[in-house]
Image (cartoon, rainbow, N blue to C red):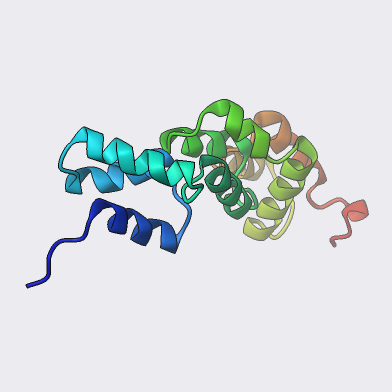
Length: 152
């Protein structure tokens, strides 16, 4: 019979697969920790050695999700993972990039401009659900199929 993995080994396994926030790592390791001190010691060691970094996690998370989701949704998801709003703001896309992402998402989901008011409302709800702000949504709907955008 094999002896159970140490907390350090479990943490290393988790971090070898992908970046995770400190809070996520804590949640995943908590069931295996003998006590709170042991868990905090491992978390502190990994952060000190830069094996676990909330900054690196935030950057990777935003880079992977910002093409499909708006800043509001990204902020909410990062907050749920224990990332404070100040750090999140540092890595969120600027308004110009967010508008370009919103247009791209809109063009991918809806192949043509809204034919009537109901269709326009549907497109707006879709973008709002994806976490784009109202100003971005309105600008995206106005300009998603504009000829100067390079799309027909």
